[in-house]
Image 1 (cartoon, rainbow, N blue to C red):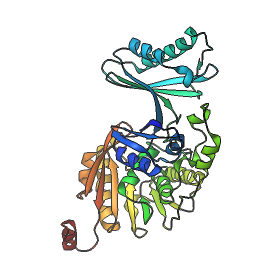
Image 2 (image 1 turned 30 degrees about the horizontal axis):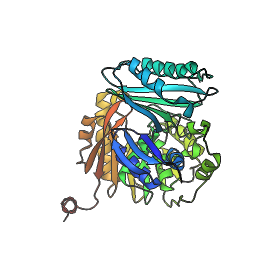
Image 3 (image 1 turned 90 degrees about the vertical axis):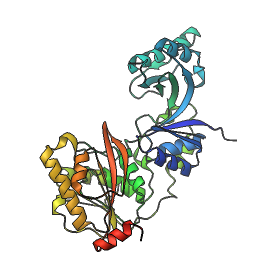
Amino acid sequence: MKQTFEMAAKTLYGLEEILAEELTGLGADGIQISRRVVTFEGDKELMYKANFCCRTALKILKPIVGFRANNPDEVYEQIKKTDWQACLSGNKTFAVDAVVYSETFTHSKFVSYRVKDAIVDYFTEKGLQRPSIRVNNPDIQLHLHISHNECTLSLDSSGESLHKRGYRIEDVEAPLNEVLAAGMILKSGWRGESHFVDPMCGSGTLLIEAALIAMNIAPGIFRNRYAFEKWDDFDAELFEKISTDDSREKEFNCKCFGSDISRKAIVAATKNVKNAGLSGYVELKVLPFQEMEENPGKGILITNPPYGERLRPNDLMNLYAMIGERLKHVFSGYEAWIISACPEGFDKIGLKPTSRMKLINGALNCEYRQYVLFSGKRKDRINASAGL
């Protein structure tokens, strides 16, 4: 009988429901949704699959111990009580990272140091070989999460954040996080049944994630390494089976079309698309959005236009007014989805959103808005919006 255990999948704010759907599809049980995290139950195979297949997960954690503490010394005492020989041996290296949301604990690094002290002292006091601390690429990565006085210490099965897929070799200014890009696409409901358009594509992240979703190619296909591969109980044969299974992949008979005003961006996007092995599914060209005169046929448009400090206020307002004008004149019949941290810019688009939701891009609070761009006469549009 397979041993099951509790796990926690970290994600970005606003993507929790999508991640829960992904985990359900992989066979997870006991799913509970919280802010930026989804907890679930499963076995080792599911842990491997969650790392390899989930598009909207940042980390897959396996909790070791949970407790309450009011200061770093209490954290030390609780950690020292834990049976560390069950998951860490003296010939291993380890590191601890901490995420703290608390008025009591104000220095996450100091808390991390106390956790390290407790683990080392545990081995020393038992007369055992003590594991070594190694910041970069340790054998065992530990993750401490503190919310007020609730503390959870977990094994980090992922290592480097899962948004770092491995296909992006060229960047431009303010690149979109891959997990956020995948979440935006999945939230739109698009799964490859029509063309995909990003007229301000930057280094191509939305286009690449869209092509992967359309063909149901696992995002982990590009990664070289996961933290669980260094665990003593790592099942290489099982992971090989998971990572080479292409039975769920499907054909994509449409295309992803990307353009940008910047030649440098298109050069970067071209390199990234080629590195991902998707050149046959993504078409790129240098073209300012304002000069776009036709769409490629039935499709969806999703884009991340510049906002914030990247443009002067007047230029920013003109940009969003232009976006609204092009959507109305070039993309009738489309759904358009736009993410932005600029409410005034949304106002300049001049279209009524069909839906809106909050997302976070880096440190910026954003809205993600859907516009249904009806074709035909105004009367028809009014009737359609009223459900007539």
